[in-house]
Length: 566
Image 1 (cartoon, helix red, strand yellow):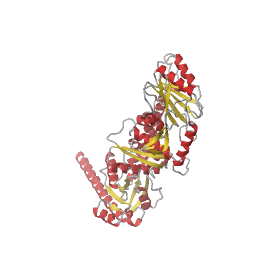
Image 2 (cartoon, rainbow, N blue to C red):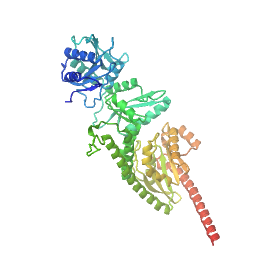
Image 3 (cartoon, rainbow, N blue to C red):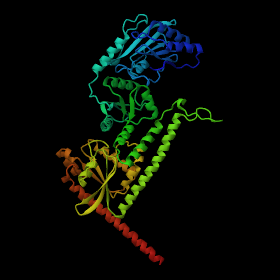
Image 4 (cartoon, helix red, strand yellow):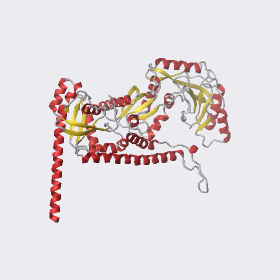
């Protein structure tokens, strides 16, 4: 049982008025009534005396959970995290508040609170001469009627309530359950509505949404619906419009969703603004990618890198808290709240980031030592790069007859893997697989994988694996090339490998071969790889010859300098 309390704009109230509000909070309504006649009279009297709106959050049992003191023209419902849903999909609470305007009734903000907080009912009590006048009641409905997801009852006086409040709410919940699609029960699986708010074209937004669906599938999230909203500019507070947010929350109520997944990266204030208007969990694309990486990392280095990226992502998202959990300090000049819990959390995260930096540096030194030994043996290195799920791990398995984990999912493999490969003309190389790229790859994640990506700097040849069966493969090529340029790797020889050509029509395969954009293969079929090996060997031989000529020129220059000194 939660503790009843008075909250809101209590500034400037007299002690007697505060006591009257507290006594109101201790009263109890009849469960069958939306609000009793006597409680409505007390509500009207206090609201008139204070010249402020006053609201009640009433539990289905009739217990008054909270008394809310507002301003002249509005009330603000506090966070309801401590109150769970009761008996179904609705919140288990109804809100009753006064209005002081003449002829006022249910406002758009009331509808927003009703929908986003999943309240049982929203009731507005109008006043006349300081006494209760009419009660205006609105509730949610499972199916839209005339484009609206809510229905309004005929206004009535609190002393003349004909309907049973409990029977109405239970009937509504039965309708919600009946209208809700049947989903397979899976206890640890999230059910999400995907949201994309963009200023770009519809086609680009749909491509981005398709990729977000694949990311959600890779994370084990069940996608219930997809919402795309195009705007001239993003809303600075909600990122999407308030009306669209209300529509999405009502959709989540009908579909049984428990997660909102945004394609855009949300600022800390935007996350707070959205979560303040709904009890759904809210995450963005960056957090989803970090979660996928955390579940896929297997090596110690990979786990350290992911933890580093998650902590850097989390640090600015910490919200302010009150001083209830402060660490009190003692002594002259040191009395007071001391460190707040927020400051303690930030300091601990920064300390952990410092320790992770040291551990990753040690791991990076070990990797550098292994690369040094490899360079001494003068073995050429080939690195596989490309968009995630383009088939890099499958190609490595086929070339080297390995059994590295490969799956038709985004970021199925994260940890770098190296294998030896012998070319047809008796030439041995080392081939490495690295993490796949994706559009808008989080900067903290790219920074965390810096030591892993150092493997690419040692490569003599980059094989850019491209999934040509994907309709957006040209855009994916642009993304990878941009990332390689940002990493200053665009001066390393790069061979485009057009993978999954077996999924193309004969006409598309012919057109692709005539374009000579790269070497066409199917990573699943070894008989298609010989042209790739011959072309890669040809490029490597040219690189090694160039390297040998440079070494020869340097040795000649050194001999000339020694002769001149003699």
